[in-house]
Length: 294
Length: 268
Image 1 (spheres, rainbow over the protein chains, first blue to last red):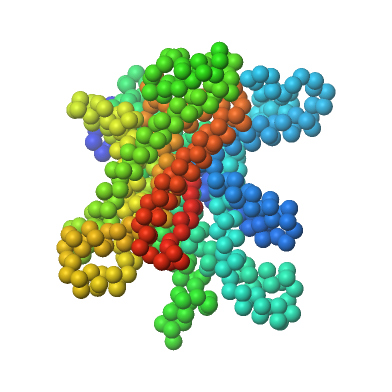
Image 2: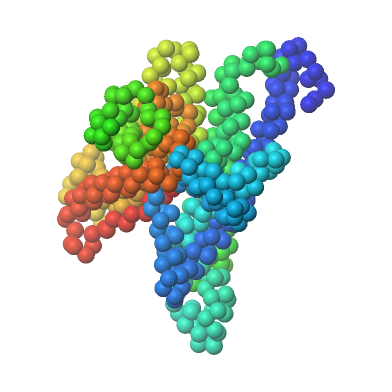
C-alpha cells in the first residue's frame, strides 16, 4: 500500500505496524465492517416492513388473515435461536430452487429428493454454476438478509402489534367523530402515534439485531469474524511478508470494542430519538416535556 | 438394528460413551432423535451450571451497581456494560483465543480451552451481567414502605438484606429472570459454533443437528427435532421457575401476585 512498505523485513515498531495494518487483506477486513453495516442498513427497514405487515395482518378483521399474522409471530418467536438461522438458509435455498425447477424444467421426471440428495436440473440451480464469483457472494448475502428480516420481522410485528393497541382509544374515537374513514384514521392518527409506544421495544430489538450480526459467519458470509480468524492466525515467513504469532485474541478484542462502541452510540442516539418522538404526545413523558418548556 | 440398540450405542455419545463412529449413511429417524437428545446433555450442563453460579455473582453485581461508593459502583457498571453490550458469539471467540494464548504461556490453562470449562466461564459471566441488570432494576423498585417497616422492626445490616431486601428483590425480578434463564439455555447452542471445538465429535444438540443436516441435505428433520427438544427444555424451565415464583409470592393476596409472562428473545 504505502511506498515505504516494499521491504517489511527491514521495518520495525510503528512503521512495521502501519504497513501491516494496510495490507490488501486488512483492507478486506475493514471492508467486512462495511458488510456488517450494510446488513444492518438493509435488514432493519426490511424487518420493520415484515413487522408492520405482520402487525397489520394480526389486527385484521378477517379471521384467516389474522391467524396468519398471529401464527407468523408465534412460530418464529417460539422456536429457539440460531437453529432458525441454520435452518432457514438451507430451507429458503431449497424452496427457491424447487420453485425454479418446477417453472423451468417441466420435462424432468426424476424425484427431487433422491435419498440423501437434493437434485434439481442445472438451469434451476441458484446461482447458476456459470455465474461469476460476486453473484455467488451476493446470493449468500441476500439469503442472510432475508433470514434476518423474517426472524426479526416477527419480533418487530409483536412490538408494533402491541404499540397499535397502546394508542389511546379516545384518539381513535375523536378521529371517527371528525368523520374520518377507518383507512384515514389508520394513516393519520394510529400510525403517527404508535411510534412512541413502539420505540422502547424497537430499540431493544435494534440492540439484539446488532449483536446478532456475527452470526453472518455461520451463514457462510465472509464477515468480520471470518477475517479476524483468518488474519489473526499464526503466519510463517514462507507465506507472508509479515510473520507473526497467534494474534486472534487481539483481533477479537478489536471486534469486542467495535461492538461495545456501536451499542453505546446506538443507545445515545435512540435516547435522543425518544425525546423527539415524545414531543407533544399524550404520555407522562410528553406532559413533563410540556411543563418543562412552559 | 433396532431403536433400543441405537439408544444404547448413541444415547451417551456426546459424553464419549458408546459407539465411537457417528452414523455415516442410511440415517434413521431413531438415530437422529437419539444423537440430538444425547447432545442436549451438554446444553443442560452449560445452562444449569452457568445459571446456578451466575445467580450469586448477579446479586453481588446488582448490589454493587446500586451502591453509593464509586469503587463498587463503577466496576459493576462496566462489567454489565461489557457483557451486555457485546455479542455472546464474539465473547466466546475472544475467551477461547485468550485462553489459548494463556495456555501457551502457562500449562495451567489447558482445561480452560475445552468447552466444558471455558464456555461455562463465559456463560457464567454473561448471565451474571444480564441477571445483574435485572436484579439492579428490582432493587431500585423495592417498595419504600417495606424498607421503612423493616427499620421500624429493628432490622439492619445483613439480617435486613437477608430477610427483607433480597426476597423482595427476587420476587420483583422473577418474571424477567425466568426469561433470562430460558434465553441462557437457548444461548448454550452457540458454544460449539464459536471458538470452542467439539473434540472427538462430542458436541451439543445443535452440533449433531447440523451434522445430520449437512450429511442428508435435509434440514426438515433434524432441526424440528432440535426445536422439539428445546421446547421441552423451555417448558421444564418455566415449570421449575413457576414453582419458585409461587413460593416467592406466597404471602401476597391472590390478586396481587405477579404472573409469569414468558417472552423469550432470540440472540444475545
